[in-house]
Length: 90
Ligand SMILES: [Zn+2]
Image (tube, rainbow, N blue to C red):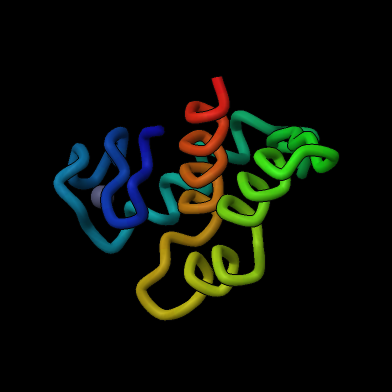
């Protein structure tokens, strides 16, 4: 994942060193990647304890509150969460 919640590696303003524009740049890149609007970013097998736990870790209430709360990484953080747990599932 290119966005770690603070710095966006492809940010054209800071080249990934971290700046005020990183989140906006990451959001823009996300919208470019998903031009048709929100789509399911991940599938979780909710019939297994592992799948349900992964879903909770990535997109559960606490994860959402953290990502969109003070100092959170916004949608980039959620995407990173999903990439992380999906990586762990494989
Ligand atoms: Zn930046």
